[in-house]
Structures are given as structure tokens and as C-alpha cells.
Image 1: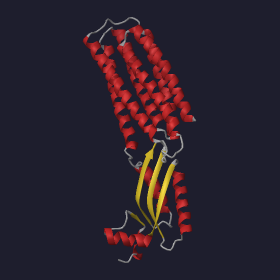
Image 2: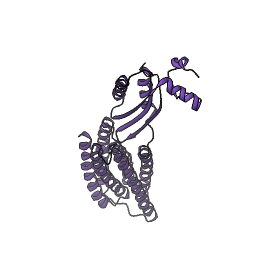
Image 3: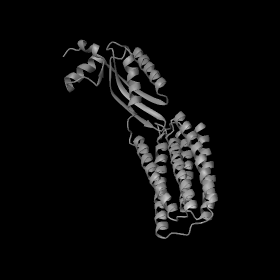
Image 4: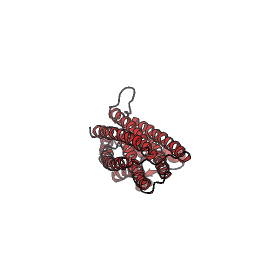
Length: 311
């Protein structure tokens, strides 16, 4: 519910800023303000995409999507990145055109300066709120929206100071030059967001720090004699882990089940929103197989049990 409220707040804020910037941009004739209006329009569309994605990503697994709908957040953040790229290209085009064909500096820059100051303040507090909710809920879509708005803070601040310089100096080319600087920052944000969005879509493993938490749980349980084939990935806010765990050869099926349940619970305590699949193997038999067939034991083995191996 927090994710949905945060996304709706972003939609409302961006809608108001788009209207204000378009009106003031048309009044002042500032290409920097108009470029910010276009940027805010992409923010609005991105906020709508983020809202729809967080609603869909929370849907439980079904027959057609047994692993859930988490990747919709990665897809939405990638769509946001493409929107940001498009906005940057538009701003570059408009800025270069204005530099080639300069206009007379409009005397009505007061409202433009005021609306950019408002934009800086509104997006600063909204981006902080979205980031907080994104980290609490592990939402990539909201995090993308927060980073999008953080870039807005920087670009709006640049436009704000650029307009003040233009007003003071009456130098026409300062306005489109500031807009070009805005475009560069937007392109950088789009590239960073694209990289973050593609990682889950390509089933990249969890960060080393999170994988290490899993290894700590496995290594701290004396009943686990070894493990290997640890594979991890992320889908939206849902983590997925599967691995092979070696237990005592004489361990009963009931006891083996109890151990895996304990391991899963311990891993869930250190990594929330995680789906775990553990394949159980007999330690001595598996080690014998690994040494005979592959010539080496699995990656993670409790070394104190190696003297038990007979090859």
C-alpha cells in the first residue's frame, strides 16, 4: 500500500509541475523552462508507469507466472530510461536551434525563476520520500522514479541559476546553454537507470553482500556438511535462491526436511522476500562422485569432513 500511495503522490506532483512549467515557459519564452516542462512530462508518464508496475508486481504468482510478476518493475524502469533519453534528445535539439537562431531575451523571467525554485523544492522532498519507500519495499520501479526526480532537482537548480544569470546579464545564449547542461545530466541519469534495469532482466546474481549472508547461514549450521551450485537472482523485490546441500548419509528424510526448513527460515530472517529451493544430497556419496568424476570437491565443503573421504 505504501508503494501505491508514493506512486500516486508522484503523479500528482508531476502533473502540477508540468502545467506550471508549460504556462511559465510559454510566457517567458525560455527554452530552459520549456525543456524542464518536457522533462517533467516524461516524469509524469514515468510516474504513471511506476504506479501501474507496483500494482502489477504485487500480484501473487499464478498458473501463467509461477515465479510472480516482479520483473514488471524492471521493465517499467527500463521504459522510464527510454523516456528520459527521448526528453534529453528533444532538449538538445531545441537548445541547438535556439543557439543558432537566438531570440530577444524576454523580460518576463520572474515567474520562470519562481516556478523553477518551486520545482527544486517539490522534487527534492518527493524524491527523498520515494527513495525511502523504495528502500523499505525493495521496489525498483519506485527507486527509478526517485532517481528520476533527483535528476530533476539538479536540472531545475541549473535552470534556476541560469535564468537568474540571464535576467541579470541579458545574455541570450545563456538560456539554451543551461538547457544543454540539463540534457547532459539527463543522459547520464538515463544511462545509469538503463544499467540498473537490465541487470534483473538478465537474471544477474544477487549482490555479493547478500550472497555472503546466505553463506554465513549455511556455514554456521553444523548439520550442513557441504553445499554447492548456489545460484541467486532477483525479480522485482522478490529474491530467488537455489542450491545443493550435503547432509549426513544416514540422515532420514524427515530429519533432512527439518534441516532444510530451518535453513530456509534462517535465510529468510536475513534476506526478506526470498524464495528458496534446496536440493539435498548425501555428503559422502556426493563427495565420492565429485572426486571420481570431476577430480575436485564442490566449491563449499566443510573441510573437517575431508578425512572421511576414501578415494
